[in-house]
Length: 588
Image (cartoon, rainbow, N blue to C red; front, side, top):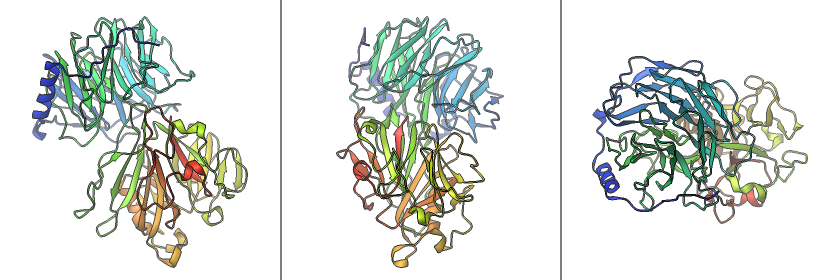
C-alpha cells in the first residue's frame, strides 16, 4: 500500500506555534481540575448519574488510565468518573453525539457508560486473544464497536459487523479504529500506518511499507468521511483524502509521547494529547487547558463530543510512594525500559527502597496486555529433558523480544516442579509458588492447588518455594531465613530477585544486591504486587535484560542492556546461551 496523499510536513504553522506557546505558558491549576464522583463498576459495566455536560461550544476530555475523565472547555468540569477498582486499565473513550455522556473501555473489553451513554454490552469476563485498543460509537449513539490489537472487531447495540482482521497475520498490531459518518463502515490503522477499510469506508491511502521515524498511535476521520489523519508518537501528522494538514510536532522535542488525536467539528483543525496530559492544538482547534504538570496518572486518550476519540490502547504505571526522604534521585519515578511495543512503551524501570534505611531495589514493570511471556529451559539440565525453547532466544524470535529474566532455584532446591511443552520432568507440588503462563502467553503468579488446579489452557508452570507475597502481604514465614534458600557466606541480605503481578495483571520484576526476604517482599508490594514469588538469589544469578532495538529491528548484543549495573551476567546472556532456565517477554 502507498499513500495517495501524504502531507507530513515536519514544521509548525503559525497557529500551531501559538497553540504550543499557549501550552508552554499555561499549566492548569490544581483548583481547576474537575471534581470526581466515585463509581463502583460491576460485571464490566457502570453508569454514572448526575453527570452534567453543558455543551455550548468546543471542548474535549482527557481520559486517564484509571478511568478519570478530565473535562476542558465546554464539556463537564464539575463531575468526572473515577473507576476503582478495575480489572484492567481503561484504554479509550468515545462520547455520544450530543456530548451529554461517554463510554470508557478497558483493555479487557469492559465497558463503562456515563451520562446519556447507554450500556449495550461488553466483553468483560470473556477471554480475549488480544487486548482491546479502541472503540467507536455509531452515529445514533445506540451502539458501538471495539477493536483488539489483532484486528478482531466486536459490535454491540445497533453497530453492524462489517468485517475484521481476526485470524489474519499482521505485520504490526492495530492501534485504533474510526467509523464512517453513515455508520455503515469503519477503518482500522496499524502501528506501521497500514490502513484497512470495511463496509462503506473507502481507502484513501496508508503508510504501509514506508519507514517511519516513530510508530502510528491513532487516527481520526474527516467530517465528510472522505479522508483521515494519522498521528505518530512523536506528533508527526499524516493526512489522506480531504484531510487538511494543519501542522504537527514532528521534529519538536517532547517529554512524553503523543497518545491520540481528535479533530474539530469543521475538520479544519485537531488536537493531540500527550501521555503526561499535555494538549497541542492546530488549525481552528482551540486550546482550553491541559493536565500537564497537574496529574501524575498517565493519560491514554483525548475525545471531542461527537467525535471518535484517539486512543493509544496501552497503560503506564503510576509513580510509586517512597518510604521517605533520603532516597536515590528519581526514586519511584518510572522511565521507559527496553523497546516499544507497537506505538508505545510496554516496560518501565525504577528504583524503590523497601523501607527507610534499606538500600533500593530495581523494579521493572511490564504490560501483559501488550506482551506475552515464554518459559525457556536452561542448557545445563535445568530442568531435565529436551525442550524446543531452551538455552537462548532463537534469532528468528528476536524481532519482538522485549525482555528476559532469570528463573528460580535449581529444580532440586526449588521444592517445586516444572511443566512446559507438554512435559513434566519434575512433578508439580501443591502449595508451591507458581509462575503460570497460559496458552496466550499471559503470566500469572499464585499457589498451585489453590489458585491453579488444572493444566487446561496452560503453556508452562515454573515453581519455586512458597509465595513471598500473598494477597498484598508478606508471607507469614518471611522471617525464617532457611525457607528462602541457601546464601553464599550465610549472609541473609544478599542479591535476591522476585516476580509478581499487580491488580491489573501487570508483571513486576524486582531485584537488589543486599536484600533480605522481607525487603524483596516490601519492594514488590510498594510496586503494587498482590501475588509474588522469589526467584533466584546470590549475586551471579539475578538478571533482567532489556533491548533498545530500533523500531522494527531485532534484539541483538548491540542493543542489549541490564536493568541494573550490579547484575553480574552480561546482557547477552539470553541471546548466547544460559545454563539456567529463564523467561523471555515478547511483543504480542
